[in-house]
Amino acid sequence: MLPLYLLRAMGAGDVKLMMMVGAFLGPLQTLGVAVLTFAAGGVLAIVMALWQRAFRQLILNLRYMLTTSAISAAGGTSPRFEPLQQTAGRMPYAVAIAAGTLLQLILVRSGGWALS
Image 1: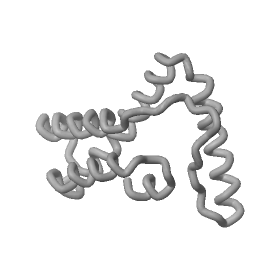
Image 2: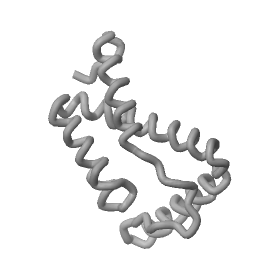
Image 3: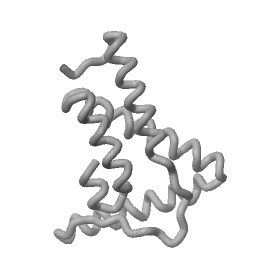
Image 4: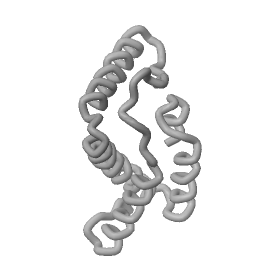
């Protein structure tokens, strides 16, 4: 998650929370948590955008970020996520991290998902 913090796409508190999860679970299980957290974050972002009636703005912002990132990468510079003029809202990403961690623990405990 540290690269996302350096790109200004994630807050420092979320990075520290993932570091704490990694300290308890180890590197392989943390990889599973990261994958599930990204999935949970995507679902949470869509649900919140629909709830706040900002889905159109979410799509426009996503298109803008992907386009500017592709142009920056083509020009040989690293992409940076600057704050946008119009946002679709802020999201408490700790909820997605908690959901990803819980889902990882449930899947490993049930034997249906293990990276080790």
